[in-house]
Length: 509
Image: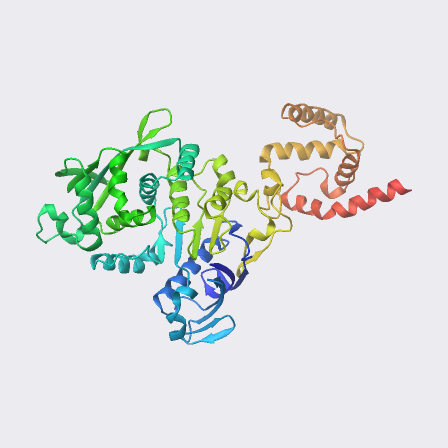
């Protein structure tokens, strides 16, 4: 599953918007300032595939999309004003009936989304699929993970349990290297009476009337749990303390966890059943204790939010890497430390491999994340008075370094220095190349040179050509005797070619 091209008529600030994504890339990264449209585009993509999977016309906006799926080229035109769609597969026009008859060849098997912020703007578009999935569970339909899946932080608990339930050396090595986790020490499932139970009468042993797949899962868990306990516990919900009727089911070690999980055959099925119980509103929380490599025991919740988020994202990628899957990650690097940001895309590549059946689209503000990419994998979003536009970087981010990326067209900063230091450096260069300085200006220059030298800025320029360039630049009247502004720096950049030509002409005389 790889998106190639997308046109959107009018959605939020995406007006007559079009983007051409390099579908040969596993990972495509969107960058740009806040409000430039990155998150809006991810939201639009979710809406498109939500409605396609539900079989309805998208009423929010008109669009045209081209993507690759199961070796097919699929083109869909959605006209919101006329409530109609056109389907083309491999340049052949299909009826709606013909398209949906082979929907699993023409639509992604999974669309995952994750947003690290507090807003539910993405999550709300997954509600219908979650409800359909829940209804299927009640009816005993043990289907695979639902087509549209919104990832929440609690899923990191289920990923961890799934990883340790079925041994894979690569998984264990990953958990040790990045999280210092060696084993699961114990698991306590805290089950509660769901909202849908209120007003109904069910024996507690029947898990308040749970049925279908969830009932089967809980019955199996009950068999392996040590001394199930029922009581009332107080929970903090916002500013309120709420008492809830709960059942504790305790797995005393990793061996019990693995024995319980064995009936599900693999970590994907086990994860799905864990998540199904959570969706049913019967699971209040999972309290996992893990053993670190030095032997200390901690609760899983003691890991940072960044650690839990990384585990959750990479776990979901791993579970569906062989499927036709689309992953939409909105600022997933927010809570990661710099070292993990640097490794983030490499980790994704290691998990997914070179499988052309998946595509990962990420939005970010961090230059560390894109430092190893070719320009074809990056799209810059610009905010305009008419909405949003996109462009490909002029050069490859790879090899530029963080400072170089920040002052390139990718991020557009005039400098990587703080404002005070940059102002002192500008003033020093103005005075250094000014002719006929006054005594006061000489004293000021000496003082600035001393201050900047303490910060690591040399008094002299080793490169003679660069020295000549600075002399020509700061000898221009418009850059003398006034503070250098961001607009001035833009003018300086445009003057580079002219100044270099002047220098070369002087040398050739």
